[in-house]
Image (cartoon, rainbow, N blue to C red; front, side):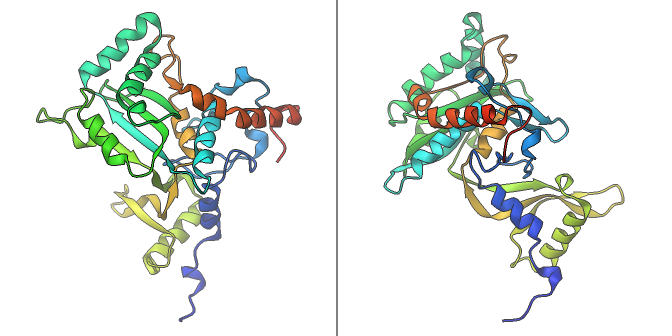
Length: 305
């Protein structure tokens, strides 16, 4: 086997970044996301959670990088993942995104009068999907697209092998967005139980980005990363704007960080835009106690690593 030169050796910084994306709720509480930056913040920069009232406050860590963290959501996703980690578990943690059409978006918004649009969607989701497919544990966040239509992100535990049946049930609903030809768009439903970690070039130091470019160009088969977004700079030269890990990662608490950016009481004029099943709330308790315990132990700003 030929000896590789240092130029083609995977960058240690990037290997470490990939490992950080797999960490859980503690481990110094790293900030991780499903498709944003991979970056671990010093514990001293993270919010201290000392009570249940603090749990669902979304904290902005970096406005420019769109880094947010909400430990209530983290606890929910951590509980979901933990349940599927049991060796004999027939469940898999799955992320479902549903893009709604104008009529269904309006139906949800009309629930604003009672300040319960999220509960209204929860009722429909339970009757149409959760109960028929025995999905007990789930969390959901409603968001508004640039088009003004609504969509929802759901993280849930479903039985292995029923993804196609769930997709079919959603396809047969009257919720889905239409494409430009007036028919249901295939992109209106996305169901996945794993993802590829992505990292923006602007999140890297210049030297790290250059080394990664060299690694991918010199020996793409050996690199842990690949370019998934090539753009043209002001100088007319192409460059990689977004890198993607070749390996798949299972859904983890990083998805909670991704959803945190949209947790708000403003979308529905005071009504919450998120919710979770009752059974999941019970399973979150160990994680909630862990976060609060860390906060109380820290005493001041930040937490002990």
